[in-house]
Image (cartoon, rainbow, N blue to C red; front, side, top):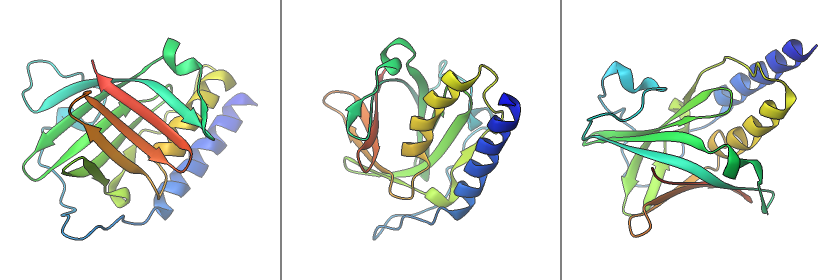
Length: 168
């Protein structure tokens, strides 16, 4: 029963990704960065000057703090290049790759090219519920990214849901 439920969640999320429209802000290019194949997710930054590791240990769901993320932080990598960047998040069950452009402190997510793995959650409903906040923020049509170079943080938010990453 749990496997069936996880498959339904994954199928629903896959459908959601197909419905996400491009977030277009004036003057921003939506071109995909040219990155080595190894940057498609799951590979930590090791001796790579175009990569910065991040850890997501703060989140809010419906405006309220998410307790589990402090004990189970998300791993992420920010790959940057002249033609664009990618932010790869290793969620509790799957990874999500956000292609983006940086404009000052604003990170513009190309929502039409978000990629995610579809492995499902083998560890049951607790992990699947953790995955829900990751999807609520990062797969939203209204996802907004902000980078703060003073505090070395990146925050992605959608409505009252948010996840904050700090350099690892």
